[in-house]
Amino acid sequence: MIRLENICVDFGGVRAIDNVSFEVDAGRITGLIGPNGAGKTTAFNVIAGALKPTTGRVMLDGQDITHLKPHQRANRGLARTFQIPHEFSRLTVLENLMAAASAPVGENVFNVLFRRNLFVAEEREIYKTARDTVRLLELDHVRDEKAGNLSGGQKKLVELGRALMRDPKLILLDEIGAGINRTLLGKLADKIKLLNIERDLTFCLIEHDLDYVSRLCDHVFVMAQGQLLTQGSVEDVRRDERVIEAYFGGGKYEAHS
Ligand SMILES: Nc1ncnc2c1ncn2[C@@H]1O[C@H](COP(=O)(O)OP(=O)(O)OP(=O)(O)O)[C@@H](O)[C@H]1O
Ligand SMILES: [Mg+2]
Image 1 (cartoon, rainbow, N blue to C red):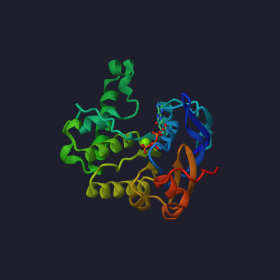
Image 2: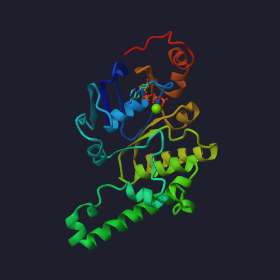
Image 3: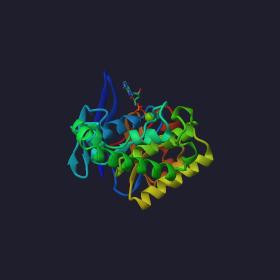
Image 4: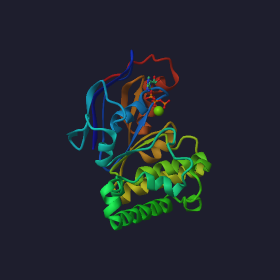
């Protein structure tokens, strides 16, 4: 579904991503792992369009989307969550989800003034989707709570809910499980699996907890120091000496292309 081709990203003089290529297959839950500073979030920014790569191409279903803006990619079914949740703290949970819905007809002044009924119907549709999403994520009991008052784990669920509001086909999850308790983490994993199977939603997730990753992903890509180190099942890559070295060592092993 998504293919990164020979991506390089430079920040000033620093090469954050160095000639990385990988694919996220439709219908799967693919993992992206690697130590801090490996370039994982930067890779997500390149996929979502928040960052233009210095070189390389981003392909979505065989089409070059490198030049598209984030909202244009969103319109094509690409959604993401942020490593640091982006909720509107003074809006309620339900309002947060509604605010994330795709281009409502009400944005058009003509529609607002002359087609009030259409606007109301759309609002109602968005409201219904938000309510269903809140229910799906088991956030019913806090749906009228200001998002700023939620626990860290609940904010992560809202983050996922906001991504779901645009009926995407691919969701990029950036450390959505980080810092949340085991119970909620298990619940989150169940939801992701359910969405993958029942809605045929494709996921690519960044996560540091490899047990959690292995529960969800049968294929992972490993990045370290801006390069793609290796790929395979979690079981295989965690035994790989280069991966062990990347996580715990001093960079003895070179990345290979
Ligand atoms: N906007 C930026 N300006 C300058 N350097 C940046 C910027 N964003 C990221 N970097 C640098 O690029 C490298 C990769 O960062 P990135 O956030 O992609 O890593 P990561 O793999 O997501 O790490 P973590 O696991 O800690 O989230 C790091 O060295 C980081 O300091
Ligand atoms: Mg990151």
